[in-house]
Length: 525
Image (tube, rainbow, N blue to C red; front, side):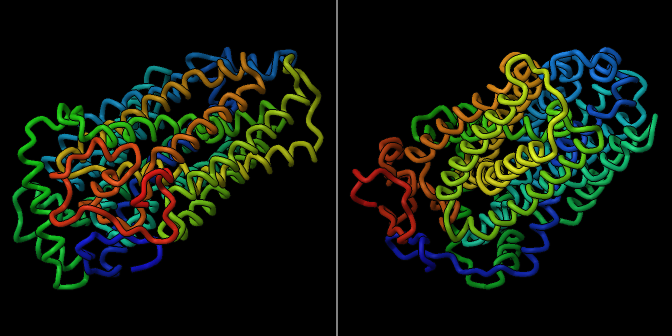
């Protein structure tokens, strides 16, 4: 067993290896993150393009381009403009609730297919948009696509991956999100040079990742968990042998069957979530996506071009700065892929929190010194702008190897099968709701809180880091169906988990030397 791994008291350890087959399927499935990432990157870019603003948001265009006396913090403050960005997330919230039923009854891959098709239709409508109403209809369809994909892809990856490699493979989803953001930023940079209709190419380009995930979902196999859940046990056994690359899969298969039988006894998984024994899972399904959005990352990624433009960069310079942060995002996510199954989830969460806090305070100071509370200043000196971008990049890197990927990984791996689809829907819904709230009020908050906005998010980074330190156990190297033991042995959550919910013969965990996931008062750790 690798250092930091887990073994049940009975010594159970599922055999299996990382086969080329599993690697290929997880890479294809992770492409579902492209649609979410592309949208995050593209929406911030087009809202900084003068031609786009002139056509759909003329009042913002006049304030931004023609009135040079206006407060820099408030020049993009427009409810309609933010509604264009944030409408997607309300739709994604609704879609994720519907996707729960589709994912559970029809399988993970069909949910991915629905997501890809809806996103493709939304991209076409946006590219052909004639007015704001048409734009928002397209955004809503994009949101439906994101809701289906974000609900099913993390579950698919967690179920398909061998537990020793689950962290690295699941983070492929976040890597695809970051690649989507980077591609969108690069395209924005070049399409912004095409006057009058360059923005149509940016919005229409969303069809490409949508087609990739749609075709990919047709080629993917179902997960053994999903097959068992839908009564296809013989097929599931054969699939599990192929997925694990060994014939000795009886222990894992039997545990999956037991989990499936238990899940079928649950007639109302949504109501079931309120039971006392699911209190830890429900708390994490709500708290983790809530905190993920309050890191402030979407402020940077949605509005990076707008933000850089606001602090004195020109049109092309602001888009290029967004390309730089997008590149950092991709590279730093690869650090997480390398380290998540070596260093553990908690270490990355806590290190990322410290790094983000420092950067947000520094950026607040730099912007505050230059613009004060009046929001007026001459153009930034080049060295000053470089320092701001540098610290934003350090901040983005911290998020990209901590709360970015782990905000999707940890919730997808902690839920028992009987509540997995419902709990993942809550996870996605909370994520989308607070993404919507932040996107909708960010520009207004920037106008009123000014440079203090960064201190607002820095405060929440401190809160979320304390939460992780106290309440999130280490899940590195734990098979999904054995996860109840982790909760049972936690200093706080243990009292909520009944003994009968533990896997047969398991009552404790032997922890590897690198696991520091509980309070010192609990002797088992």
